[in-house]
Image 1 (cartoon, rainbow, N blue to C red):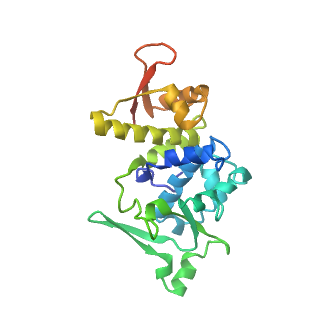
Image 2: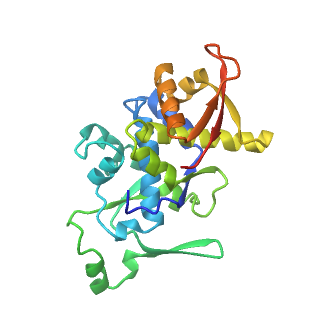
Length: 253
């Protein structure tokens, strides 16, 4: 992850959790564990777009899978990320040949200079390391569509994930996309608790996490335990009885 400036923050759409659950229930996502890949993939392509990383080197779909801890030739995920695949169809992503070359933030306004804005000679120089069929996945939830404003400019219904969390999860075999997805869900829950109760500590039972993620309780316990060991979360249970509610607090690496 050395090529990523992991202190930077990406906003993720709050609706992604409920929508992924619907995709699982409808059979559009073939496994409950593909939710964690979808969440991590969406975060990463948003990062690569927002900070103009596509202009620095070639991030193929195979390379992105590898960055997320999967084999680069893992074909069972292709239905999700291929051109006109699941995420394209749900307007979470779009295959494009155009992408940001530079980005800037002035007085709170984010702006990009796009590859298409350069003349032919400059474009050839900028894409000299790309293969002929290279394309990127644009994060539509962030840049927006013709009918919907993107999170880059309107992020009231979003939660923020620091890149240091992404780095910590992807570099730890006991964490990976599963912990990153669960951390994002915890951020969403923490933000709601802050709004209603003005507290960063929130309560959640394992049963609730089973319902939200589709995992079994054993996996919930394993992943949250690994997150505690990695000091990403604090987890406490006031009454040590099976089924009791846990209290959580989140930390940055």
